[in-house]
Length: 460
Image: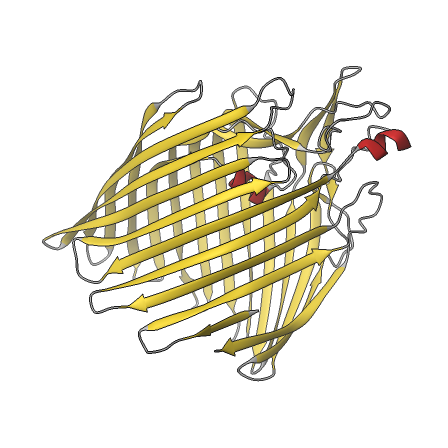
């Protein structure tokens, strides 16, 4: 549900509400696999003579379950009854940005959030950044300055012998010099950070290249591009949950340092209606985050104290990883109404200490089609992911089982019909092949789903 209005040509305000829930029903699951998502956001945007600004505030709630029990463990009814699989996450956030039309300080933004869960975990996050421009003749110098703060705590670690508290404060500075010519654009820059923390990993200075270039070989038909970039990523509990909601509230928080990512590619247009983009890259990351199953504290007969201790949740492990990556995309505009295409991604990982790139596929690919005509449109997505590896560790008696999550292929279809400028009807058909594949180990997705409704745009 979305609504917006204005009191003049210089402002706009509104908000939206999203709600999505499922009663579960995944085949073969012994625990509750239902979920509920609710989100709301309010915004206000104002345009002044020399600048424009926007502010928003929002709330998100996710209720889910650690329902992914391994088939390698035979659980007794007494053990199943001891598992309280419910988990709920709450996110409250505020954001704002401002952009000056003709000023030295070009733009700035701020984002603040408080993230909590039903296991009494708390995380506070804030980031403030700004961009300063320095025109030099025909060229442009600009710098990005950022201040990032993270503070959080978990009641205890997975062994339950200590609590987890973490604090990070990162100061970033990125100077850049941009050169623009008729067929050539070059950015010469760097990213510098000083990161302070209260943890044993210590405070540290980081520096990265930020060099990119592109050259128009034949107008816009063929463009060659290359670069060598890097960056510091501050991992957060909120980000991990958004990627994998089945993590346990016992995570160690660290920074991921992408030392460099060197890439070379070409993109363009063929026969006036075929767009393509192909790129090859080689990168090196320190402390890359990987999702790996937590050890199971039960062999199927022992009861557990927490609902995530039965091999049905994920930890985050870190490793130094070198990656070779090749990806590409082709889109064919067959006509004004019909287009189709696809993309692929190939990754080869070389890890320092971990045996595998846990839960990461080597190959991902998607085929897409879209047909639009007057008041209605229909689209289809066909996607594939290759197999992924994980380890199931059972603590008592101690054993390790290497798991291979099979590759999967599926189809989603969506349709929309616009009754008028305000009303539209939509239908989504998901997981048409009705396969309960596992995106993450032990967590089967729901089978064939039909989701439909009516959209209405309010003008208050």
